[in-house]
Image (cartoon, rainbow, N blue to C red):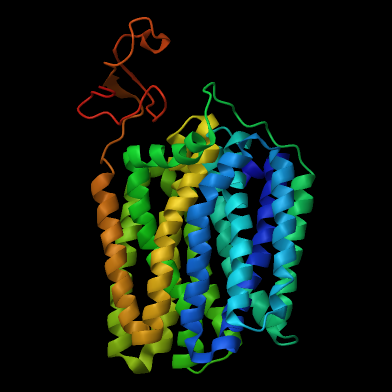
Length: 444
């Protein structure tokens, strides 16, 4: 909690918490709205809605971040919060599924611009890696507490009002976030010396990701986490309301168990990451997610009388593995680029990781409606296993802080060669280092 002593971070963290609380209410409300409009096909509708959100993330985040690179960060973030609030208060008035799709697209375009910009601000506020690690855990904890508190709050509110009012709470969260961001001065973003056009700024983060082994591995590990998360977020309402015949309040509480497991992991991770490498924590958790989804699929099909305890316990444990995979991601991004490249790196991470969410949301929604919860878990277990194995194979087992490499393409008078053509330093992909070293030789 010591990082909260920094006033700027404390205010930004408070803004994140308030916005997440509102977003959590919207998650519950969207599921119930889909059920009202589509009945038993709610899983298909919700899966499509979430897939549309992910498509917007993939396509919009790098472009908008590149365009916003020269804009004042605070004004940009506040403006996006106001746009999101306006869209949220419009959702209760929809009467058709296509209207939900349109509003979700608009909302997610604003969020796809907001999130990576906000993420890139935090490492400029907390410059020490230990502080930043704890900020990442607090951020994960905020997401997880939202996963607990928002469904509980939604369950309480649903006893006295219709779910449409939950969208008003979403708008209030965005407005509160805007007011808090407006109350602090944000550090000026680091500028690079290179002259670059919009195409270079749009693609630079993706190119760095694809050239950096740990970031490529993270994409596979994120796919494993997305498979678990998609199963929970898309099909909880269908399983609880349709298969088990329970109430709206039960839907909210089941989602809360997933958030509870994730919160537990977030509380433990700072100390775990002090003692274990990111690779060990993330790959182990991803493999565990795949195994657990497979076990849940078998239990759900083979023990129909025990479906309720299977789902409740499974959602709790899935939350633990989910958090263990995703919490350290910001450390990998921060470590893999210069400060001037952090905005485009976070935007690329946001876009590329959401490509995995796009796939898993579609699978969870379409298969859930066609073949039911058990087989859907089985398919997503296979997807998670593929992502986990890919991540473990691509990520080197050892990553020395200083990586030895040789430059063959630089002139003798290049300032980077002051220590000789063969030298070692913390290695990131940039204009001087365009390839990852292989056998201690790079940039041929």
